[in-house]
Length: 285
Ligand code: NAP
Image (cartoon, rainbow, N blue to C red; front, side, top):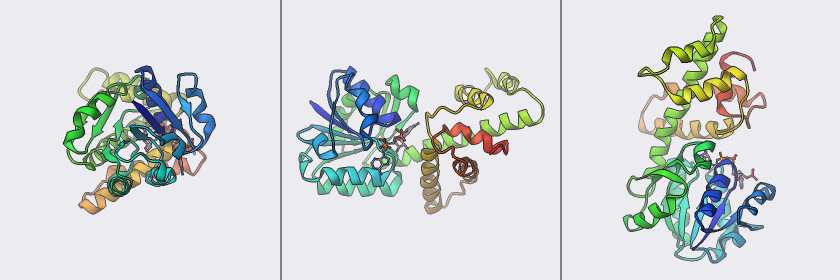
């Protein structure tokens, strides 16, 4: 079986590596070729354009920034897309985005599985993502087998598009949890307390969260190595708020997270991890 992975950013490169480790034949393409080249050592072939990447493959995986980037890559591959190939669309594209890509799949006669993932850089590297798969039931066994090298948990949620809905719900939790940690650590600092003591307060109790310790430590060090960049978090906040608006839900906590993200994005932190929200809470940007 041959796979094409379109997009080798933080997530796509880790996923491609795990498929290579599992013995799959993987061709990769990335707009900035230099980011795909480290995968050659792991056994990947690097293609110069999306068409060359998908030529003759059985499975196409997309892991690009947003719906426009995904649609452009598929359209650029155009006639070279093998009819009947399986398309695992793993980028976070929102509800309308997932539908737009389903329509594109129909145009190119691709079997479309909408399968965004939960988990950031480290789980992606460890093959421990949670996959939110949705698509035609007859593809379920094949898709679950394909997801095994990259995901420790794969949910099969229903018809295509259901995965993207659940991804917005999951990221509502991620964004608001990060904003919550940023506020607690910022307030602790500003009140002359040690953020580590706050983490001790919650440690082992019902409100403890391993994530609070990881992100909290970054905030206290004021170092924000990107696992989930501010740019992606902002894009997702916008998708979530649009979904909330059309579903009649007041997502005030997500709006607050977006306000913090906007503030750091305006000050050259777009490529930092979203834990940089702390700087906005501290009014340090
Ligand atoms: P990333 O490291 O910033 O990678 C983004 C990828 O998209 C790169 O390959 C980039 O190419 C490409 N890209 C951006 N704009 C493009 C365009 N106009 N045309 C072609 N390619 C374009 O981001 P990531 O964290 O891997 O995220 C990828 C997707 O996964 C996003 O939808 C994100 O929301 C989702 N996601 C991220 C996480 C996370 O924690 N990081 C977790 C789950 C899901 P270049 O290298 O040329 O810029």
